[in-house]
Length: 59
Image 1: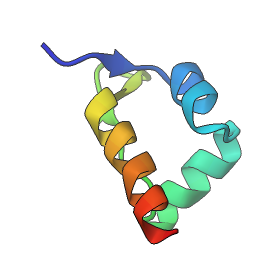
Image 2 (image 1 turned 135 degrees about the vertical axis):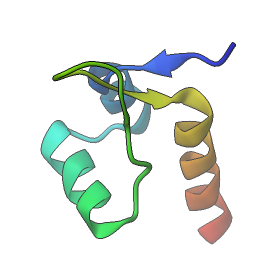
Image 3 (image 1 turned 120 degrees about the vertical axis):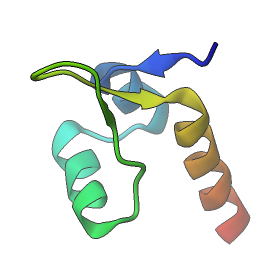
């Protein structure tokens, strides 16, 4: 089963603050979260790792 990360965990892993994460989502350059409740979202850990890998591949 895949691990789901909350926003604080994502921020810690990628080193970005909340506002920057949501700005990048709006721009289409960051993985969209999954809605898991009325006001709760989570990111698939694999999506965040893939995003990091894509940055490393870009150089």
